[in-house]
Image 1 (cartoon, rainbow, N blue to C red):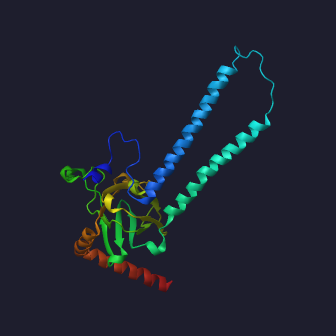
Image 2: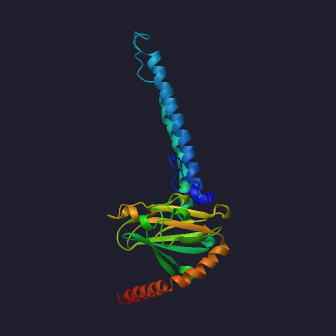
Image 3: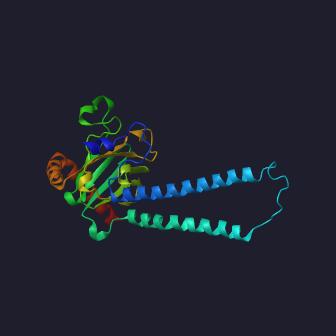
Length: 269
């Protein structure tokens, strides 16, 4: 569909991918605000330089001024930058707090992301610890007719329901990785021994497939860790859960065993 097409790489793409979450929408808005401010500053400085070159060159102004200071100008070039920084800082801090964590009372499900060399694992704690690995599909197995993209397709896609506030917790099994989905406004390190958190909420009208990649150099196959998210209606997600629980039943058992081992080790320590 159109969403799938939009969220793959586009020839000569210059701008952000279409925003699929409230966080990314705010990031784009903040970017646009900064762009306007930067353009105005550049034009002002350029105009000032052109004026100085024309007005005060040796031919037009053979006797140079000996002015050493101007109180009004000195106040202005101190106050104006402060005002500009405040205009930037306020929405910046609001955005940082907004994208940090979803409000606890609004979280409807949790997705756990685990980075490995060189693939991703996913767990659904709210769905009986459903778990599976997600690996790159080799070039020779890519099926373009199914909308698959070289280096950006996996054997097991992550499924999430639309119109659902999802807490995403991330960690790593070995080295630093980075779970990055441009359309979601997420680019978060997965750190061994630590949990990082982000959140997702995809509106129903933006259901579709979204792609990302590992964005932290993690070894020789760093470039072969794609991320593919399928945001689908809640009814389809419920059906997917039923199928996935059957398909990945053995993985769920392994997750339970791993969690039991962690509990026992903690008690022994």
